[in-house]
Amino acid sequence: MATARQRIWGWYFFDWASQPYNTLLLTFIFGPYFAEIARGYYMGAGMGEEQAKAAAQAYWGFGLTISSVIIALLAPVLGAIADGTGRRLLWIWIFSAFYVVGAYALWWVMPGGEAGMLAWAVAFFGLGFIGMEFTTIFTNALMPTLSENDDIGAISGSGFAFGYLGGLVALVMMLALFQETANTGKTLIGLDPLFGFDAEAREGTRAVGPLTAIWYVVFMIPFFVWVKEPKTHHQPLRIKAALVSLVELIKSLRFRKSLSAYLASSLFYRDALNALYGFGGVYASNVLNWSITQIGVFGILGGITAMVASWFGGRLDKRFGPKFVIGWSIVVLTLVCIIIVGMTRESLWGIPLDPASRTPDIIFYICGGLIGAAGGPLQAASRTMLVRHTTPDRATEAFGLFALSGKVASFISPFLIALVSHFSQSARIGISPVIGLFLLGLIMLIWVKPKGEQA
Image (cartoon, rainbow, N blue to C red; front, top):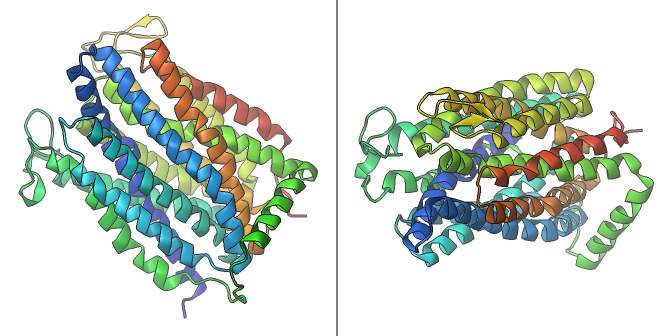
């Protein structure tokens, strides 16, 4: 039987195992790679370069929108069913399969493909993305059972720090051993891509899908060995009863002002953060003309700052509470977005920059470090704040509702970015809706009680 310490470390390993989906696929490797092949497809269809960039960003945005709608509709229902039956690990197994299949299938997304290739990429990325989001709901719901003390904030922060370290290690491995640079066909450290992968066919870059899938399978072993569900009587599946319970929880929100305000706040700021992660690499490719290797180095910087800040943020969470950490993180991210929207290689909000210099790149690297430093603690403190608004026996249902609150807006964010990108014909201006979402989240946070509804 696993000790309490082993259970906590097993729970940490989910963050380690799943983080590469965000780091490698969503943000730094596959997302920019998709932007490249989609841009090439549209230019081949007769579009100008800027129009093709905006169209590629819009296609990616609409794909994320569809996945987010599915998550929003199903997350609270599945959470209620899991709490009603007393089973969470079963659902983790099921959606882990979605994660692995979706990630592995990205190997077949080849350069120079037609429209069908773009649809394949978005469909299987969406399948894995849905798997990642749902497994996260059920593993987060186990968090209240890890400790009866007031160190949940520190546990959450350490989990995110460990997860970011995993994503960082996976990213370094990808850049050093697999992903070919555009000019030489060599990896970042000058090697030929591992296993004889064909650089011209972009096999090193495409290996990011199988690598992410295999990484997850290997590092989920400690989770499944050490993390067990609390000993409760498992109930038969009663969908009607689960839905009634969910409806009662939603109705109760009108009497639970702190929880209602927090769900509304997180609806906006988490969506904005997901948009930064989902479009950051695409932005760097389209606006700054960065290669995937440059974007990968950018990801390493962001991963390091996120890892350190998540651990430190967990300590701040334990001392000052999650509301303090969430508020300051939103402020930092808002300022970063204002800089990003106003920057091109030629200027920063009207201040001239030398496009041939490294200044625009350095500014964006600093922004990446700040995104990691604020985004990591924000995510860790967010799940701590929800724990302060629920009980262990209804945690999955609460985290399902939490996912709903995030996804209700999360399909809006990519949709707004896609829409603004389309009509402005500018990938840079297309990011601007994120600023408003962060500010709305910060305003709604005013009505959230620092200690939640523990009393």
